[in-house]
Length: 269
Length: 269
DNA sequence: CGGGCGTTTGATTTTGCTCAACTAAGGTGG
DNA sequence: CCACCTTAGTTGAGCAAAATCAAACGCCCG
Image 1 (spheres, rainbow over the protein chains, first blue to last red):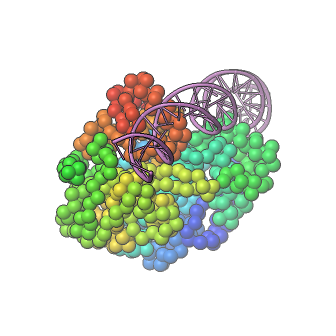
Image 2: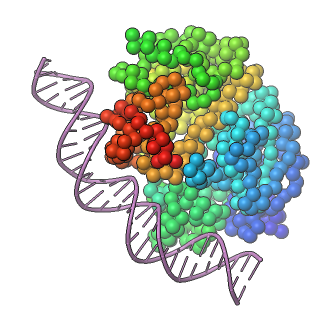
Image 3: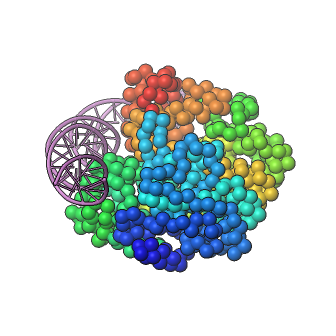
């Protein structure tokens, strides 16, 4: 039942083939066991309800078909499980189908840095291409699933279809962009600016999917959010409390209700 | 005369076709007017003394030739000049030939974040692929030059030659990796760790090129280094002084002489 | 109903920032 | 060629922001 609701929501046509396409995180979306554990698995992209999320509108049917051909399997990952780990041999990239993943970079000294929270429609594992070794852990934050895209096969069809090639290059470049944005956040912003920016980004991703941009539930703990934002969990908590005192939002635990997006934007820059 | 020395140094065979290949920054390399202002320009890669730096060893002669064909021009940029600016239409990526560039991300609120210092052999402009708009400024820190690689043409030959395609993908993935490393630095490290890590990274890049890893001159101001490391210029200066007091290095302005790399590594993690 | 985890909040300490003064070096123009 | 001026770098004092340490709360979940 929950399934139906979610599917229904996700099936809405994408506003465009391009922008940041992410799975919604409205109340229901993250309730309890989270996203539906679909087992439609290897039936290809042609009839995948998430098609519009990870395949751009520009592709011709034949191109989608070829793309679909190489996506032979999906992987189900339970909460806390990994899609891949740092050090693993790289063979595939992954298109997230349901749920939510975090990518964690573990430094030499054991320091953990969360480099991103990834929602349906995003591709992860791109950092493994360089030397064919995965450079981070991809950990499921809820029961999640992802389509496995063998990279060698993807390169092959990219050589045959310029539109697919371009799609791949855009994916790679987008990841570079995303990381640049995070670098700016970590390099130039204060704690309150970081959180405000993060929340607005989340809100934007949601509204883009046609969901409420005002009310949602975060999929991560304060500790994880702190790791991503480069601040301590207590500081994250204090900033939430401050925002609430300021009337910018109302929150209880991970549930967030944005009251004054403009006010948040003023803080975030 | 200075020219000859530099060329001589740079012409040394690369240790491998892969690692972080960067222009050396030993005393002479950054002295006064810096790198040679070469005007060999559009004679192609086949006889370019920098060939080994930006083209991997795996490519066949015919592939190098095809690659060379599309590199029709080089651009000379004087100190402070830009190779491209945020907002420019993206048409090409650039292979740095001589000198040094910084890439600067300007946030909405005008905050400047230096996202990287780039030396010969590196490719920049990859973040512009996504939406065909450059996302940052590439500013020359000395008189510098770069080969212009039209991206459409590169995609075309990447479709014809798998090895070139792979080379391109590795370049893109490497940039994602590089940024991940910086994110970890900004997200988890204290000021002294950041500087120690940066200096060792610099040192490593240098030794890779066959230069002294112990003695070099930094190409950037304290302010620029601070921007990159996410700390203020005064803090950078204090950390240098602290390291000197600790006997880890000896420095005067931008000249650095590393005395205890192990000690620096202990700090950097 | 009890235990444990995630979260909030407070008190204190530490780190790095801000403001400010001073020094050194390089370039310019008389 | 020297005096001046600008810019980069160093250093110190005081301050603000965030980390750390510590305690208590609430809420799932078994």
